[in-house]
Image 1 (cartoon, one colour):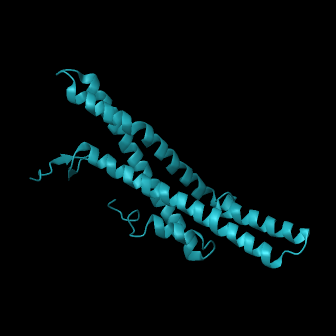
Image 2: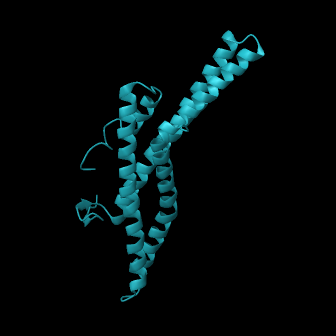
Length: 189
């Protein structure tokens, strides 16, 4: 038969169904969602689409070296903009870097949490060190969760403003992919 799920308290004090690992697996899924969509943006908008635009421009209008150099300079400027390397996009670029840093921190901390949790499960009664390691890992993972939600909300809000102005239409795809169901815009999240 199917085992009933247990109600457990999460790090924020709310009761939820699942195990302590459930919340961290959800955090992992959120991180994966954001990082995968950032990667897809880079691969599609920067590597794929812009490269194809340069190729088409070279084939259709470049007849001498000066025109090739001008098209290439225009391409490099477009790449700088799409890679968020210009001054106006500093907030977005910094937020993306923070999100990627959170993913790296999670990659290091989650295995430690799993090991600490396994060690605590077999620890002799009274061995508080094993439980302290679990608590420290949980605190670190909760910090990552909060930082990820703040960074992702900021990224979505900034992208919404930029897309609504029509300045960088290539960012609309990233916005839709990141928050297609307004998951990161909801206040209760």
